[in-house]
Length: 260
Length: 260
Image 1 (spheres, chains in turn orange, purple):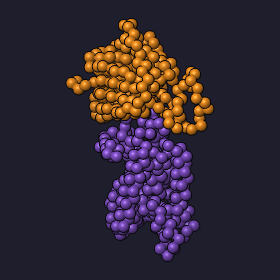
Image 2: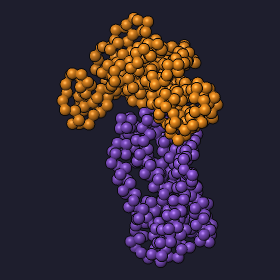
Image 3: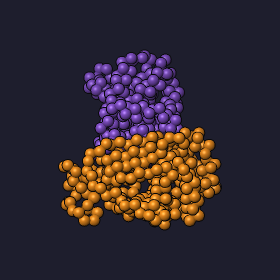
Image 4: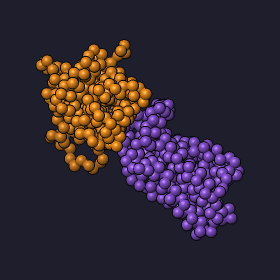
């Protein structure tokens, strides 16, 4: 991989418009502070001026309570949400594993769902077919792959979807939460596989509330709360001070996302 | 503007993905039913023969004229209706895919068009059966019906893009479309026949875009002559709907993900 892989965010902000009148008051306490007035619009500030850089080889855990902006950040990195303000540069091909069930068909077998999911994620049917034995082996689902998805437990679905995601080419793998659905042995195996895959030139970003899980897997943890980064620490223990600069400047809106 | 057009063109270029997904949808539909995908043909057959005989009697038309008219007309209508009403829910029901997979906007629409084109091809057997049953020979230019199908697909691509985008923003829109389509069915000469001597009937047809969409496929099957103006009108409609779809897309491009 000779092209650059890198993520750089400067004051990355993502706002969701809120219908006029839905918010009764603007107060500063607790979750209410997320609703802000921008010009004459009320917005939900999902991500509030995040600044960070992620270099190749890093495995970054995003940790924080419900509604702290973890998934929104992953979607912004994927290129689904473009920055409302600030700048985000993503260099490299992203691949995501945000939603466990998307693209899957309940009546189709495991094999067919591997194909469906793979094609939706941008693979050619032929190339995903060639990868099927590896995907099947990693999933450890055995004969269940001949059964319709209806008969799968949540953990088995996760295995299927994750095994597909692992085989898709990417420089930056974005994952949400789902690893925690798996049992301990599969979790360890998947974690080992991710460590190996990320090794030198790739980036892994995984969001979870499960502190233990990401401490075991990641080299760095970004802690989010109320849409802001409250700490940015290396897993070895040393804490970098969080970037708390409050600059409100209309920045360039740029997402360089090479993913398909 | 440029990048919006590029995205739509890249949607077309990615034909392996949507063609495969559309085919696979046909395969997976009604998996657990014995008649499976042929149900759509069977239910069309029940309607065509039942209503065909009833209206041929009520309107005093010979069955060998009326049955091919309603047979071809109703099948084409079901094809148009299926696509138009599907468009109203496509982005909402595939929300999970859109929020993760970074597909070009029209991929899911083309996927639906492939599925319905396959069903239309399957229903061609029903048209053949009607012609055999009534012992009517198809017109000498029957192959031009294929050109009509292609033109219909072009019109529908733009129309569906427009309806899908507007319905994602205004959830009432699709109900309005559904209600409108129910009325249009009766305004279009499918269960009644054109009569040049009847001015009201001719007016209903002249100002009804759906008449041209149906007729451009039906005419070569049941009539001995070619009507060139039909092709020009439907081609014009295709340009118009695709421009409308493009304008809606230009407006919705950055906003669509926030509406879902």
